[in-house]
Length: 114
Image (cartoon, rainbow, N blue to C red; front, side, top):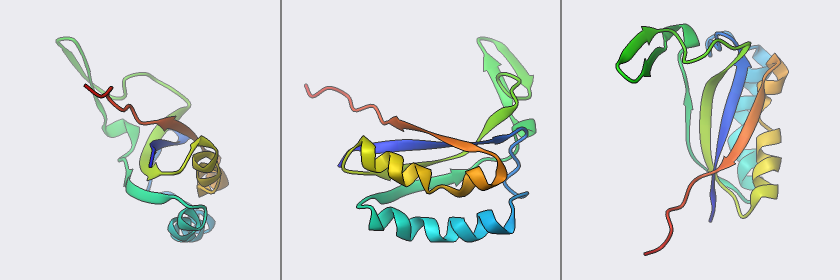
């Protein structure tokens, strides 16, 4: 089954510890909803705030995120879904929108068969 990354965006600095009770309750329902749509969660990770980032550009290492932005990647999920349409339905269920954020869905790269 194809795999998709669901990138979760929140307002900077994207602190996962400052989520609303509604978001938390919806997040608890999310795994069951993924299964109902025919998908499967593979992995999910919340990131520390973007203020904890360290960026590397060639030999230059600096504190802070790679770029300054109003929204930052706050976490990501990897899901399996039969196709992009199902992956998008799963992504729309993510409760990040309750706290003003959004998601981006990308198919994972599959190397060509040799």
